[in-house]
Image (cartoon, rainbow, N blue to C red; front, side):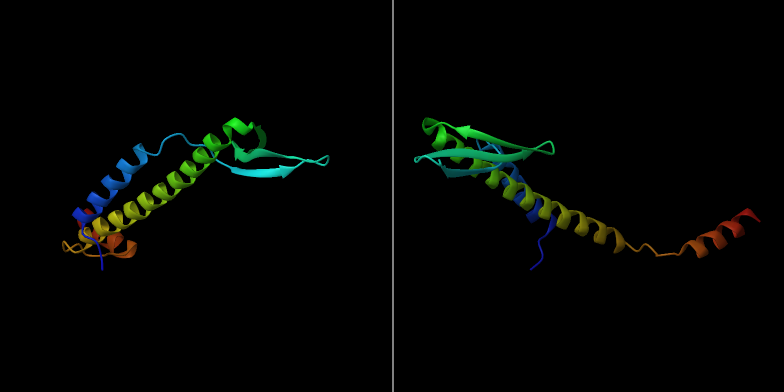
Length: 119
C-alpha cells in the first residue's frame, strides 16, 4: 500500500523526533581482545575521516562505550528510514506534477516549436 503525502510527513516527523532522543553516539565496534600473557581487554575500532582508529577502553567505560556504539547504529537506521521516506515523498510529489496535465515533449519538438515562434 502506498503512503499519502500526509502519512509520509507524519512518519518523517516521528523519525526526526526519534533522532533527537538517540543520546551519545560513537561509530565503530567494541570487541574483547585476549592478551598473549593472559587476561582480556576491550578495544574500540572505527573509521573516521577516512582513517582507521583503535582505542583502548578502560573497564569502567565499557558500558558507556557499548551504549554509544549501539546508539550510533540506531541513528544510522533512523537516518536510512528518513531517507527512504524522503525519496518516496519526492517521488509522489514528482508524480503528482505529471498528473496535472503536463505534456511530455522531446527536445526535437521543443526546437521545432521555438522556430515557429521566431518566424
